[in-house]
Image (spheres, rainbow, N blue to C red):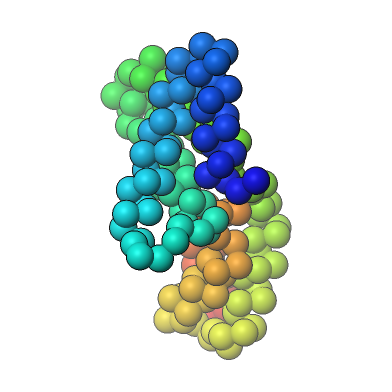
Length: 151
């Protein structure tokens, strides 16, 4: 079963069980997936496109949580946190920092990076391998640190 169908199936189950919060969250995800389908026409949506939508949703929730915490709105931060937990169930297992570093080392060797000027090349190579499995900000920070060490 692909990811989109799993979300639809879970939506039906949430509706049957009366879990309104989960229903609202999943409906929002489905709407975002449909928007992505429209944007990609005439090409069919693929699993990687659905993962991109989910990663965007996770990123939005994390940013909202930070803003709500800064604005002293813990009840709204808690709501976003619950939505984040629901969405993360559909993402693949996230890589550890050590695993990300291994991918970075491989990418540096592949593109023969020598300094921070090669960051774009390294990021492109790493993100192809870790897409959906690692946070882009974390990868960027690790790549930057590694390239600075090399200089």
